[in-house]
Length: 155
Image (cartoon, rainbow, N blue to C red; front, side, top):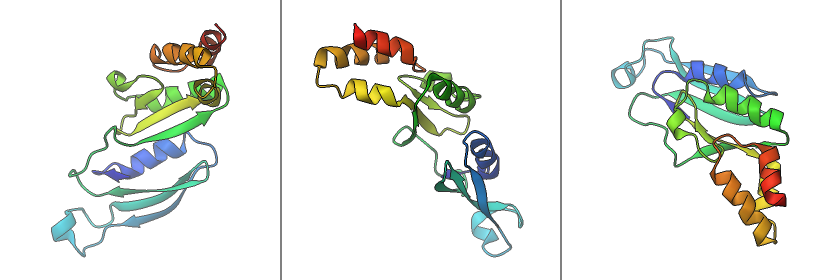
């Protein structure tokens, strides 16, 4: 994950949201290469971390690359409580205009999909009448409401 200079702040934010998460290593910029990277010696260069046991790395690489919607991280949720937890925490300070169909953009510009597992099952149902009702309901939502999705699916 490429950040301008907020990698440590972002990683602390993410590891505070997901269970089974931790920072595993921090590397810092030194004098070497300062003419290229422009960072003060001792500032964070890279951070290795885990979210729900999945390894990630974040880099303070400068302003040349930005996050966009071409990639997002999907969070599978078993309950409405999980959907609500991840949605409220990850959307805090993010772009409200980027919220649609379970997608949100956090305050660092990273896109996330907060998806109830039951929705995947409904959309994949061989009964296209049921799956299309679920799809129609889904398209009306920002944050997913599992009970409303189930009602639409059932007809």
